[in-house]
Image (cartoon, rainbow, N blue to C red; front, side, top):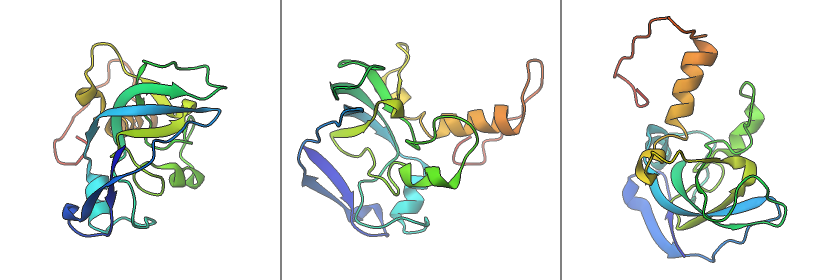
Length: 172
């Protein structure tokens, strides 16, 4: 399968295409055939060598969408053919952030989604709503969760409250 590696911090021109073996899912994993990826500001910072805790070479990009192509023997939440997005931090499934989740961030300390196929834990994917295409869904894993956290966890947003959205950042 085709896969891209970011070989060093610097321009995105340091991306190299390579052939890699097709990954086989473990017992609790799914293999996702990636149909779309999106670039977010964190990906740019990593590519420039300006993001801490990243070692090169690496498969970049945290946000993608695709189709479950194979499932491990113990998988029960999704099935072959399901449209899914891998979540940004594979081990952050609920509750507040803890530093121990960081190594599971795709495209940073863990291999990202700029590959034809990726294997991730079955708990590390969410189904894509039918009304969204792959390109739309690929923009959501990091940005949507960041926005949700800002509004509902940090901001304690409740029905009837007013929200001001400024278009000044990489997520807004």
